[in-house]
Every structure is written in C-alpha cells, then in structure tokens.
Length: 182
View 1 (cartoon, rainbow, N blue to C red):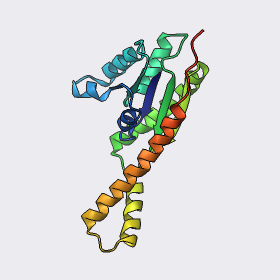
View 2: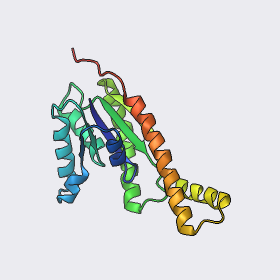
View 3: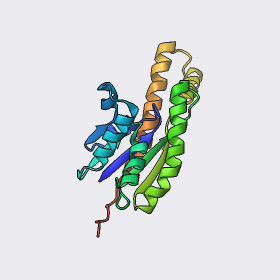
View 4: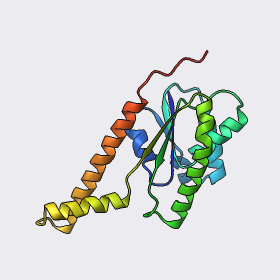
C-alpha cells in the first residue's frame, strides 16, 4: 500500500509517517540536499511512480506531486491512500501560513480527482500551539506546586499523548485491504 501524506508545515506529516511503522520517504531530505521547490515536486512525483508495495511518502510538496502525477498519467492512481493533515495557522510564521493556505487550496482541488481514481481519502486535524497553552493552563490549575518548566514538560507530554491517540485512530482508518487492480 502506498500512502501519500500531505499537509502544511509543522502539521505532523513526518511524525505520522513514522508512527505508521512502514517504509517511508520524506521530501525533507531534498530540502536538506539543496533542491528547489520545483525540483522537490518532480522528485516526489517520481517516487509516486515507483512500484513499491508499501511505503509512506510525506512532505510539503506531496500534494503538488500528486497533481503533477495525475496530469502526466490520465489513468491509474498515484497512491492507494492520501492523507491530508489540517492545522491551525495562528502560531505559524507568515511564510508557513502562506504555504499552508496554498497547500490546502491545492488539496481541495486534488482530493476529488484522487477519489475519482479510486484513492482513499483521509483527513485529520492536528494539534496547535493553542492546544499546548490549553494544556498548560489546565496543569497550572491542577498542579500549582509545579515549576514553570515542569508544567511545560507535562503540557508537552499531554499534547504528545493526544497526537499519538489521533495517529492511532488514523492508523486504524488506514487498515484495510487494497483491492487488486483488474
């Protein structure tokens, strides 16, 4: 099964790919190698064309690579499952916020084409800094004896537990038999 994981910056794509416990390919590797945005999209499109049986492809360019793959391949599907992780943007930098808005718009156009090609669509909301502050306020009220650092660590643990539970739910949604192509 090939899973494409899409979403804006800091939405949890890499974390979800790791939690799925299957081989993964991350487009972040190309950023580190100095590739441009367009080169990253083309390389990701090429990954989608590989005949690997099971892998997760994740990164900020995946949604654009899916669109490119479908434009170049009038039939077939680039993956079995496409996941889009929605994220609140209030705690992102202006550049990250712009990327997230652009990717969400591209996703809204892409998901229908994927559905028509038989790709299973899964969408989820991920955690924000706002959720961390909510946990911190709760911890401060419940445990006034904790230092600021201890309360912050506990808030981070709660947020991680919340995300892990959401990732488990996504993993359960992704467990199904992929129909054989006729």
